[in-house]
Length: 116
Image (cartoon, rainbow, N blue to C red; front, top):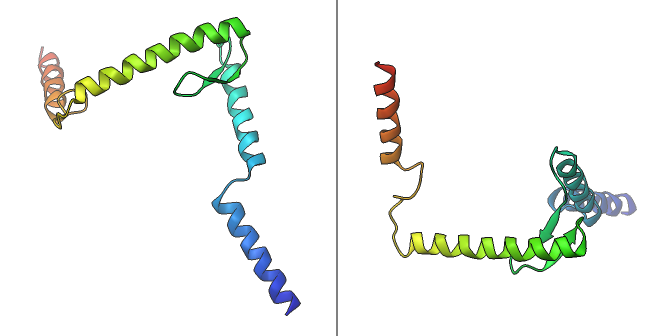
């Protein structure tokens, strides 16, 4: 009975480790991702913030973080408003660059240029 109980516990532990990552593993993955981003040429800092503009993490100075957070928050609000305005209850995909009519137009341009 003892070995059956131990085997059952082992199986449950294996299930948990494969279905939900541990917090430590997730934190390590986040740190690895941030390190990869920092390593790219031209990256001066990392700013992680909520949708509302609250700063969660920043490698910038406090002043830079606040300035960038305000700008990024404003930009995301404007982008969201634009998307809502474009959608505005219209179910047609006319503003979708991958829409069939847009693809046909692109094909026409490509075929006419290849005939010259």
